[in-house]
Length: 459
Image 1 (cartoon, rainbow, N blue to C red):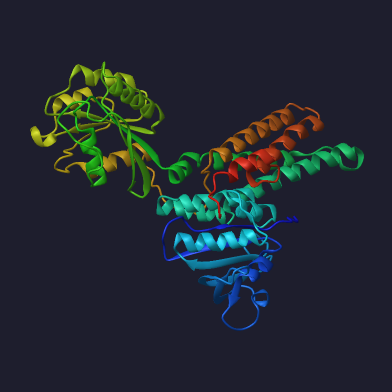
Image 2 (image 1 turned 180 degrees about the vertical axis):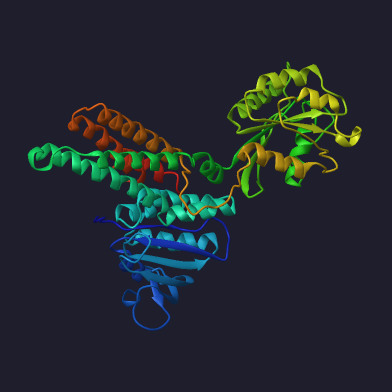
């Protein structure tokens, strides 16, 4: 695909650092860079070999002012990230120097890149498909080693290869049906082996869909809401799990007025811990807003840790809260076990039917057992680890595959009911379109806009 203009952006995070990189991509990237970068020695920059670093100065051509001493590299098309000519200028990491170099590039012919536009060009130029382009963002945002391995696998095309295999089955069946429609006397009707291929495609789609929960956990992490009545030790539990004083702890009920979120690694996967305001009826306006946000956090959570105070025993408010959240994944956490003799039999009776753990947030006891219980509840005994086979990590992919499966099922049902081939073909065409949404073969412009708008400028 021919893209006429040249884009530029800062490719490193804002602020001070060791280096800051200004990236240019497009047909005039080398020409523009050569106007502002002068190597210390050797041939002119525009004649540099691809993928070699040159030391020199960025100079404002209009004033002759030296802006920075930098390393610059040309990556000639198609051997670059975007499959276009790319120049990367490695400046010293001060914000001002990087901004000045970017301004010079823009002044001499480049356009400021939009969010994700470098990766979008890589997709449009055929270097990455859409699933691989999304994996770039997953690599950047990976929160655990397993999540990173999964994202890198997607970037290398593991999911795309699986989609291609399913598409091959559908293409083969489509070809057989179309041949039977166009040349019925010579070819005859599509046979049992074609129906079997369609069923194989269905099984492959089902296998991929079965990976969704595990893939989502690796990609997005687990959302855990800590709830309970006021003053049972919710904030103390958050601090104990984080091993830092993140939330204010007080003997005064209702101290926490808003949700507090922090992320930690728990047994290899990322968890978003949400400390919430105590659930109770209150006339205090601010506290009532906090209680409303608590209920919202509980609704959206994958898991709820309901904290009860073993030193006071189970109160009617505890029973009311459990009744309110009982349809969620719940672990009952009996806090302040250091103040009672062992586990409270009262908690065991109260928590019948729910997993439960006794801890002391103050002393730090029982936390390993709680972590193990979380893994047990979430994973159901499965071991969460990086896998060679692809996982579904995006809701967009899951939705497209579910729709694809619906149409494959409809085609199989129609086939077995003896429906005409042209009616079966309609469902197969639609199933292929939904597969194409994953890799980008049939993606609409508005979908591309939505996907790449999540990227930062410079990637």
